[in-house]
Image (cartoon, rainbow over all chains, first blue to last red; front, top):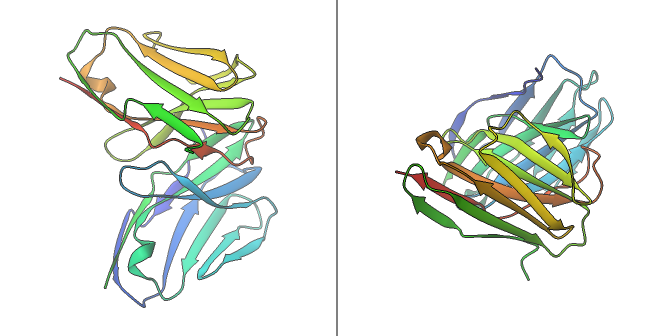
Amino acid sequence: TQLLEQSPQFLSIQEGENLTVYCNSSSVFSSLQWYRQEPGEGPVLLVTVVTGGEVKKLKRLTFQFGDARKDSSLHITAAQPGDTGLYLCAGGSQGNLIFGKGTKLSVKP
Amino acid sequence: DTAVSQTPKYLVTQMGNDKSIKCEQNLGHDTMYWYKQDSKKFLKIMFSYNNKELIINETVPNRFSPKSPDKAHLNLHINSLELGDSAVYFCASSQGTRSGNIQYFGAGTRLSVL
């Protein structure tokens, strides 16, 4: 069974701090996606990475796919209260998406 | 216009009842999904349909029966509801079945079985 482990599970920080969320697996994935989910809403895609070692930037968010395509990280620079939410990584395999259990981020003003 | 819409948003019902959740997408996608998110926020695929045909069925009890009357709709019927069915159910859609394709999610249906 393919599993994605996310860490940390919870993260509470002050506005302006930097943070990194990790997504790890023992399995290789054809692609890795990061979603953000706000309360009462469905997940919204932030980025898809498909190549080992790939780095993508989305404003203050930097996403990296591991060289072996088994892990990924999300780094947020100078976090803002608007970044608060549940961050989910999802690995693509055989037409299916396997989700991690999420990291609940709270950014306090 | 909402891209993926689910109804109802909230559903409270008694154990043993039968209920349905409807999903519609106006994105012109050919693939639709149902996910279950438990109280710990773990999101797990239940079913996937491509062009009205079932392509993924992840060991879901046969009390759950999806139905796709056309490519834009994927409804979920649940028979004999149990306490453990309480969760948030999300519908999603994508163009194509590749796992790297963008999936668009509805806002969810919060099911509470009493």
